[in-house]
Image 1 (cartoon, rainbow over the protein chains, first blue to last red):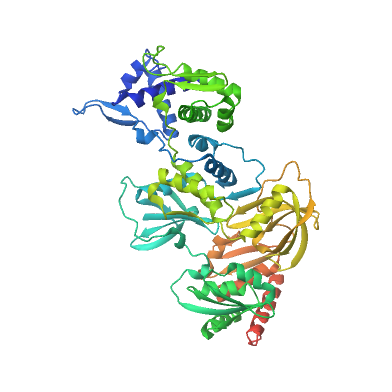
Image 2 (image 1 turned 45 degrees about the vertical axis):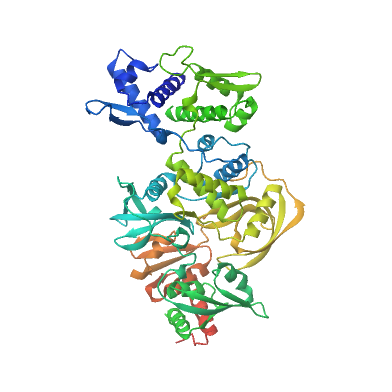
Length: 304
Length: 310
C-alpha cells in the first residue's frame, strides 16, 4: 500500500502542477513509481490508479493536448479537486461531527473521511444517546441530489414504467425519501425507495426550478392535507385522547380545550377520505361535529 | 485493499492542507483532529517526505516531519486545499445536519455549519433539500436524551398504539432514536423487568426521577423490533382495487394479488384498518378481528347517534 500511495501522491502532484494536459506516456516517463519497461504492467497500474482516484471523487479528465486535436492528455481541474473553504469554526465542526455520528443512511453514518476533508473532528462525540436512521443508502440519493443541484433531468423506473422528471427537490418526511418535481407537465412526488435505476441526464442546467418552490411544503405533513378538496372540519376529541390528537393536528388548526378536558378543533381538510381514516382511529373517543356531509361520509363508511 | 488505500490517502490529503494552513500545529492536535495514533502520523509524514514533483531531488520533494512536538509540512503548496466532498458525502452530511436541526435538538452552531456547507457544496439547493424528523415533542425528546446521557430513571405514562391501554412505568433509558418517521426510546422497563422500546409520541407524560441507574456495558443497537409471534392475531383480508395500497404499506403476507394475511399483536389494529377501508376490503377469516370490528362499528355509530344494527 505504501508504494501505491507514494505513486498516487506523485501522480496528483504532477497533474495539479503540470498546467497542461499530460499524456499517459508523459506520466509513464515522468512520474516516479510507474513501470517504464512493461507496457501491460504500466497500463494495468495506471487504469487501477485512475479508478481509485475516481472513486475518491477526483476525476482525471481527458482532453486534447493542443488545437490540432491529435493527442489526448489528462487534467485534474482544480474545481474538480479542491473543496472551497466553507469557513467552519471548530464549534461548527463539532456540531456537524455529532450530527454525522447520530444520523445514518443505509445503516451507515458519515465516515470520518468527510469530516477530515472539512478540517477534522476537533473533539470526540462519545456518549451521545441519540440516533436517527434515514433509511436508504446514500448512493441513489446522491444521484438524485446531484440532479437536483445541477438541474439535470432525472430518469428512473417506477412501478415498472420508465419515468423522466425535472427534479426540483429531495425531502425526507414521515420516514421516507421523496423526489419532487415535474413529470409530464404535472407536479409529482415519487417515493425514492420504490424507484430504481436512477440516472441523471448529461446536460446540466436543462430546466429552471420554479420561483417560490419550497421543498418543505411539497409533501403534506398530515395525510389529509394532500388533495384538492376544501373543507373546514370541526371535530371534538374526548379528554382521554385530546393530548394525542393535539400532537397530530397541524399548526394551523384552531384548538379550544373544554371544561372536561376535551378538545374542539377547526382545521382545513384537503382529502376527506384520509381525514375520515384518521378519525376512525379514535373509535368512539372523537367525533366530527361538522360539516354534516363529512359526518355522514364517516357514518356511511363505517356502516359498510 | 483499495478501500484502505483510499482511506489512508484521503486522510493524508486532508491532514496536509490543515497543517499548511495552521503552522505550528502540535502532534497531539493533529492526532486528535484526524484520528491518528502517533505511529500512524509518523508513518504518513515519512511517506509524504519521499514524494513530490518530477526530478524527485531534494528541492522537488515535500518536507514533512515532526520537530519539537510540532508537525512541519513545507514544499507542498499543491496540496494546500482539501479534497472536494463526493456527492454521497455531501448529501449525508447535509442531511444529517438538517435531520438534527428539524428536531429542535441541535445547537445554533449546527444550523450555521449546514448553511456554510450547503453554500460551498451545493449552492443551488436552497429550498430543494429538506429532512424532516419532527414528530415528537421537542421537550420529551430532550428529556429522554438528557436522561439517557446522565443515566437517570424516567417515570412515564404510556398509551400503547395497538390496544390504547395506558400504563405508568419506570424506565431506564438507553437510546433515543428515530426510525421510519417516528422517534423511540429504548431501555429497561422496571415494571416489565425487560428491555422495551417506546414510541415517544405515545408517551403522554414523562418526569425524571432522582434515581440513577447503571447502563449495560453493551447497549443493544436501537431498532424497532416487529417480531411476529405465535400470539399474533391473524386476519385474512380481500383487498378491493382502492385498498391495494395496504399490501404495500403494511408488512402483510400476500396469498394472492388481492388476498393478504394481516398480523398484529392486537385485534383492534386490524379492526380499525378494516373500518377505514369500508366496502373496499372484506374480512375473510379472523374471528377475534371480526368481533372487535363489530364492537368498534357499534361504538362509532352510537357516538354519531345512528343505529348500528341497520
